Each structure stands twice: as C-alpha cells, then as structure tokens.
Length: 562
Image (cartoon, rainbow, N blue to C red; front, side):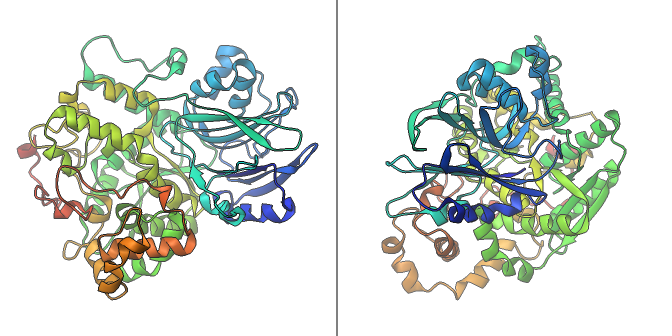
C-alpha cells in the first residue's frame, strides 16, 4: 500500500501544487519522494512509500537501468511477478513486484501487459521515448485511483480524491478511474496530454489471460466443485502471503474472515512463517462478533486482540471517518467507524502492517440476507455481478481507506480474479442460497475440513456494523439518536433542492452528505447511488430491519441449519 500522485501539463507553479500530494501521506509513512520529469518542467511525480517488499530499491518513481526511458509510480501487489519473470526471461533489477509491469509493457505494450497482471494495482506509467502516459487500475478497484483531466491537456492522478481537490478550477471534475481499464495519452513536448484510448483489459466474467502460466491452480476436469473452490480459494490466500512485514487478519467471527484466518494460520506453518499470526476483533460490549471471534481465535491458536468501543467513541470519530472515506454512503460509513478504530489500535499497539479480511465474499457468494428474496437464481446471479462491478464504490472503499489512513495494507483474497471468475462460471442455481442458508456453496466446500469450528462455518450472515453492536442496542440506533437533533425537519424538506443527486431520505444520510460536502464540495458523483438491499422497499441498509433477519446470537444449532 502506497500513495501515488502525478501531474502533466501544469500551467501553475508545480512546486506549490505538489503540496497537494501531502494529503495522502498516510498511505506511505516510510518514505516520500518528488521527481520532476526531465525536459518537462510542468510534469511531476510524487510517491509515499509503505515498504512491504523491497525497502531499498522499491522506492518510486521506479526507473530501471535497462529501460531508463520508462518511469512508473504504482500502488499494489503483483502476485505473479516471479511467474512472468520465469515465463519470459525478464532480468529484474529490484525485489519489487511492481517491476513486472515495466517489463511486460516494454515487451508487449500496455493492452497485453495489463491483462497479464495477477494482482491489485493502481499505476501511472510514463514512456518518454514513445511520448505516452498510461494509467490503469485492477479489476475490482481494490486499489483506488482518481484523475482530473481538462480540455486544455492538463492531467492529474492520485490514489485518493483529496490529493486533487487543491488543483480544482471552475468546471473541473475529479473522477474515480474505472476498474479493469487502462487509459492511454499522447504526451506533447509542452507536457500537455491528449487521451487516445480508454480500454477494458479485465472483466469479472472472463478468465484472466495469465491463467496459462499458473502452474498449480487449475480446476479439475471432474465435477468436484467443492474441491475446486477449496483449491482456488486456498491459492488466493497463499499467493497473498508475500511480505517482508508482519501479517495478521481481521476477525469478526463470521464465515468470511474466519475462513481467511484459518487458511492463513494453516499456510503460514507450511510456508515457514515463524511468528504467531495476530487476529483482531472489535465490537461493543456483549456483541455477537466478539464472542464468535474469540471462539475462532482459540480454535486456531492465534495471538488474539479484542477492542471494545462505546457509541461515544464511535461518534467522536464519525466526521473524521467520512473525510477519510471520501464517501457519504450510509452502509459504508456505518461499517467503517469500527474498522477505523481497530486499524488505529493495530498501528499504535502492534507491529502488524499487512492485514487480511473477508471483503468481497458477500457480493460474490450472495451472502447478504436480501438474497433470500431473489425472485430466481438468475436474478440473484445478476445482482451478485452488479455488486461486484460496483464494489469499488462501497466495501472496497471501507477496506482501503480505514486501513491506509493508519499506514496499513489490506489484502482481500475473496476478490482474487482467478477465484471469482471460476465461482461466477458455476450454475446460478448452485450459487443461490439453499435450504434457507446464504453462502451455502462456500460453506459446503469447507465442510469436514476442520479449518474453523462447525458452528462458525454455518453461522448466519451479520452485516459488520450490526454484528459488532451490542445485543441490547444496535450501532445504527445509536447513530440515529445522536444525529436526530443535528438535522431538522426543515432541512429534510429542502433536501431535494440542496442535494439533487442521491438525495438523502433520512436524517442520518443527510448528516453524512452534509459532512461530505464540507470536505468535497460538488463531488457527490464519486459514488453512483446509495447502497440498499434489493427486492424490498428500504431506506436503511441494516440487515436487522429485514423481514428474514435471523437472530444470530452465537448459540446456534448447527445441525438444524445444515
């Protein structure tokens, strides 16, 4: 996890404009570098470094001796960097996984190079010889990237929108870069750019083209779907256990984080990782998540950390969290407060830097409770794909910003492109809830593996912001009470006039939008809509308000659910 920033064709004072890059300093607390481009005074790169792999030669902008005309700033992890090196005989000059991008681009061009990448990434690459600038982002947008492009040829790129707001002029628009796309620009001698192409290189529906060089992770040709799912999710976790810094895992006690933690502990032993794996849980007093997480941690033998927070502590950081997130989506904000507090604890109290989580599973495996109301498996499948295509606006934002704001890196194996493309290729009927149980297919795949306790494997779904709440009073009820006096009925009646796009319909959503606008005025289109459950009338995303919400207190009869 790092922070990247670049501008091309500036008509202003670059030495002053580069100060905007310090708004994302939290993303790379280990080192910082600014570099002007040779012969282009109005072009500049800035980079904040969190050293995970190559601390010495991984500093950026990256430029290698054999290809000095190519410069790159990049945030992410390329998991197949050694495989492509072996396949094509590349001579790496650093230990940085990102170097693979430069060699692939030089050999094949950007269209093919981007499609060859197995990983999560946001990248800006400059080819001085060809006079080209490229920006690209991974399939699910796990790594954030924003751009500001003007008609006069000015281009600015940054990991977070806040790093570009100081450059805004009248009628400017800051936009999130599209996941799975690359953009190509011609660079004139004046430093100005002209967009040549915006092209998709990865789609969630299609198998990646780099599958041909994955040696140990092919689905078997028989019909053992469960074994294939186990194999590919295990490999998704294994390839991410790559770091020179300590690794740990968020643990809510739900299915997704527990499976991830179970595999990390198992694979860590196999891979010779000697330090104890740390797991981290957060919740209010007597929350279901804390009880479940403690049981899983004891089963796995992890070094478990439990953080208990009060509604007052959550409310105290609410505005800070909205600024950090760059969103006003209700579900995202609610679920992010606790994760923000937990990340702060990890930063201050431990030496773990790389964290794993279960993000992406609910979208992929139809884990949200509202999927029980899908009119048909095909409609459930269509909504699962919609959620995955838009995840960069919601859960991925929560996952990235709450951790990166404290200089931590998050890894999300459920969004592994190889795993997700296989899972989505299975019949819609298999992936739908079965026997009244959501995520049935992934649960059944790990049945009888003794990876996690059986009662956790079959524990019903809880939204993160619901499961961490006290059993006596939910987190969203505490938020409603606190916000009630801050937003008047008059303000609600005038909401349409003030906020014509994604108009708030509740006092809570109005408050979030109001705070967002103080930091990012006019940038409401950074999210396309407010996340809500489908196939029902709802103006609140909490799972606990749904008709078919199940009491998920941890005392559960597992056999009855199976």
